[in-house]
Image (tube, rainbow over the protein chains, first blue to last red):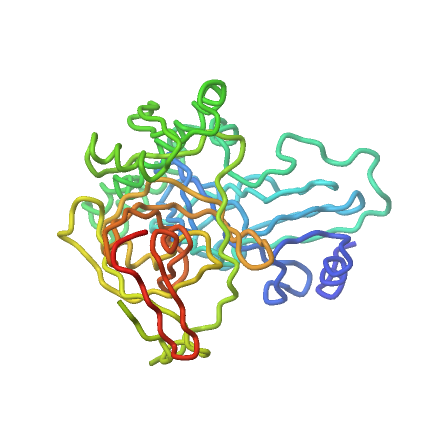
Length: 283
Length: 127
């Protein structure tokens, strides 16, 4: 049985389904619209992109992207989910390629693979509803709930990224190039820029240094736990106990530019901004 | 130095400080604005447009939590040089649409709030 709007809301309100940051605006007649989350990845960029910081994820023609949902989902043992792109994006030429079923017992954020089959770049702004999740109530609880490798996923980890191909899909690239070549609206100059890496160079370097930090962390934990480390050109180059003093030293030694400074610890550094915001009045 | 609370943008009036900032070691591009003094916030927050205007480079990242401990996602951080009464290098994140001075910056200075007169005093130099 597919849950309808009232049943979805009731299941969330009662805690039967856990759906973080639930919004009635995302409720559809018989589905729930999941929103673009904090992290995405495109083969053309080759790095995990912080969509919250960038404001949007840009998927170039022929490119393959992974998009993580904003919402974190926890299904009970007697429910499964199926998801697909919202028709708006399907009509624009995006095709969702992976993970149509969310197993009973799954908990975590959904990761959706998308190919852009159009001849234009398509933007997915942060927190935009982009895929619909249908929820099915089963006749009974499953014997064994989902316990797979993606249980609890909240980030696009190296483990997920490393399984992807290195380049955009060849067939999609060929088709798009043919389309572009025959399209009067796109000139040869624009066609030659397909798959160009368009992130600012500094941000790409920063993301690579950050990924190097994650790779180096297991070894660093053995020798520099609790200290800050500066990663530059994928190597740990400076260590210290004060983040600000360390960054001063790094900029003094290497000049101002992209690098990564991280705390050698098990957890991501956390900050709290607890003050409730009241919109500022216009002067 | 003494600054009046901002009663145009905030109700009740709130303490704000004029700040000038640029990337460390290079004041070619600098921005001056007023920022809310918020002792409840861990880290200084600036609108993304302001950080972009300074051509600041990312240096670190944080998991950011808002009211009631709800995660509001990841944010990259930047180090900027602030000129208030003296110069300090302070870490900031690009969050929200108003400049907010968090405790990582406030704790570098001696501030005194006087609510009835709606005045904020800041000692010259850092303590």
